[in-house]
Length: 228
Image (cartoon, rainbow, N blue to C red; front, side):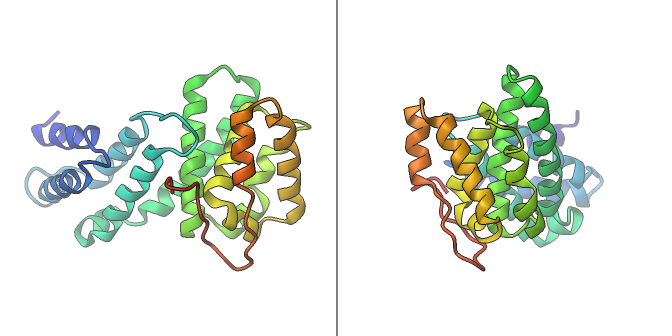
């Protein structure tokens, strides 16, 4: 591994909300040098690796994940940089599409193998990312309307990971799903959630504060207070 590769890796592994501005500036500086001089690193490979490293940084307590918020910010800032975006076009769409695929796949996997905590962690981080991308307009309306919620309520009862994902979607993107999903689908989600969360006071409280705010034509959603 070259010293520049290691520098970029260390910057990403140390990235946090507290040091974001300074660390991102350093990352952008060295990435630009590496892609435009004889060091000749591959920008797409470096950025993809950075995104995966950020996603592995850890799952915090609760449903709304700071990891996902930081990752969305990082991708957005890369796209806003004219020099970097030339080398890695369409980062939001590219990773939104791949994350949706992983989300659907891991939902099936966890139905059969619920005792896989690592897969469940990624599944819930993916749910956080999808909710934020839906609010930003990167998830196709058809996918919001016909696929995401339906993939979670296709069984007579909810599995734990499915209930948690629904709480995330309605907590972070309630207005977005309320604007595009059929009311009967929303109703089915909440009927199943009420039955699933009845014995869990923490989930019951979350359920009470995250009903979808139906605003037709809106593509934005309010999140849990202080966490969006």
